[in-house]
Image 1: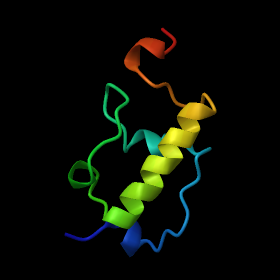
Image 2: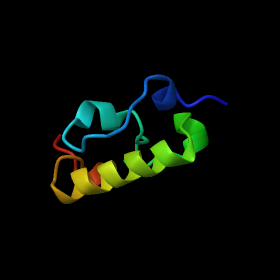
Image 3: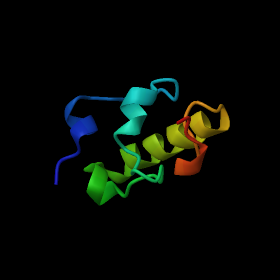
Image 4: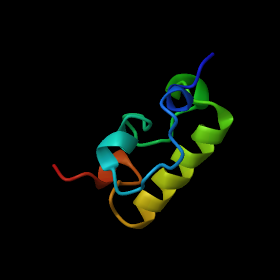
Length: 69
């Protein structure tokens, strides 16, 4: 299985790019698995750390109940 980010030579995942990070998060705002995301272990860790940092900075909600309706 080929990693999409390896093919595009991505070396850094920015936590401020919430639209990009949103595609790696499920509807309940859980971080998706590497199999679901289609990422290698290296890029899965980078995405997971970026999502966690974005949550800490209140850019992405922790749960579905925290979204604005």
